[in-house]
Length: 341
Image 1 (cartoon, helix red, strand yellow):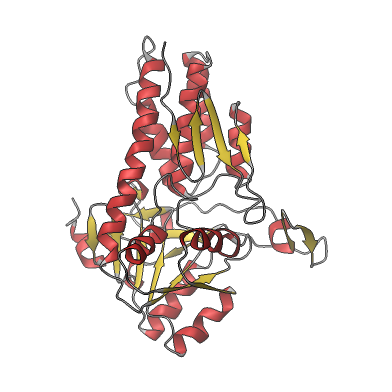
Image 2: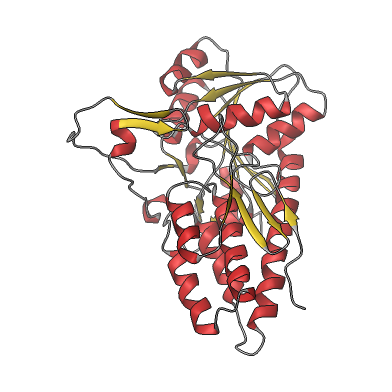
């Protein structure tokens, strides 16, 4: 009987034919696993950020296609589901890359077997890529370093140890005495809610700060390095990441603080010449007018206050110290020269 082997991660599980997601909107105060049975459920989970993080979204969408195939979806229904998933979030290229790989040369006669094999392969690949990024980047962190992060880049954003947070975890587990400053990451507080939760689980010392405190810490020389993730890296090294990353990059550049982006090669979009071509998702106004979560809901602005709410911004490559990928560590010059190839 055809089936998808069980898989288990911090935020996604496939157990005995059930696809489970940890609802990240309820963290850190409530850990609730959702059973995702339909395409519309998965789309809602992606759009409402119950599942988030560029690598994780790609894997989750792939597992959904395989699950639908096992539940009897026709070949045509699978193609329609892939299109619907592809449209669920526009910026994170891992989603598009994963779906393209799921559908590549898909045979109408054997699509179920192919989808099951490919989904499992993408899950296992992400675990491996995270390990390779962690090993490649950990040597950049020295004993005694204080590190600034933005958004969440750990096991809640991947099915492995994470991207930027995976590097930090590897350095910590190798015995280095480090401290992490966590940007709360307005407006959805992924740093304050998620990264703090992960660091607590890993017993890595941290301090939570509001986003507008990073400059003061850098001026006081209390930040040694910055590590962030990415949702899409352009061919010239420009990259999109959670809104506020560009501001951190400007501050780091001014204060001469090394600034690193950590991502798997699946985040690279070689068809995108520069950051100017990266589509930026704009989200609903209520995310900025107030805040909500397991703690409840609070609205602090006028209910009809005009809002600008891009989910991501673009950081130019020249502000980077280096790109940390599963393929190695590259300066912006090396990146543009294609040394990674």
